[in-house]
Length: 205
Image (tube, rainbow, N blue to C red; front, side, top):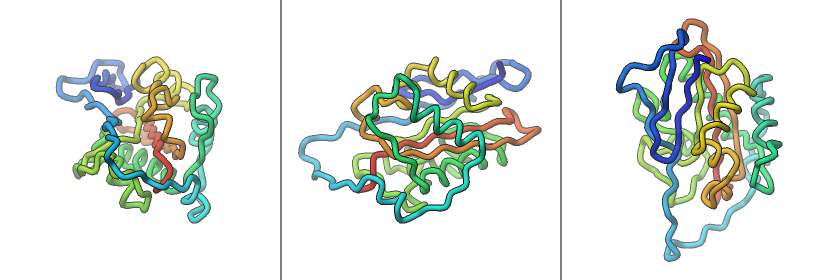
């Protein structure tokens, strides 16, 4: 199947174009999201789960996004005890997917050099201080491309151990990320056609 995904934990992505051909050298996607160790000396953050959802509502999801959210929440392997839909993260995820589709690229970093952490912060979501705050930083996003349905995208991620760890909360860093948003966009004529983004972040502090 012609599909691609951005891997986590230091592994490059293996991408295929719509004809099923391997991507040319240099088009693999760098790792992300990348956890940063939080030391005991860092100040304790007082988090407010769900605060953004109460203050910021009214996001309309398409059918693909609703299906992807259900898969994230109800997968039998999900280790998080709760997942909360967050409208800010949903808007950013949707914008990320639409931007990749419109500008015909596939990367955690957009053509302007900004990553998911920057976009979430600019949209008003407060990320923890120990997350990567560099312009291209990514501690929260998984992306996929070329999958025509949410089920296919999810299956692809589940066959990638680093994605599986992120989306199912299989590591302590990811288990703390309990607020999420999902995005999907379709652009006929673009390299991959279908573009997906999942943002999962620690509740705002």
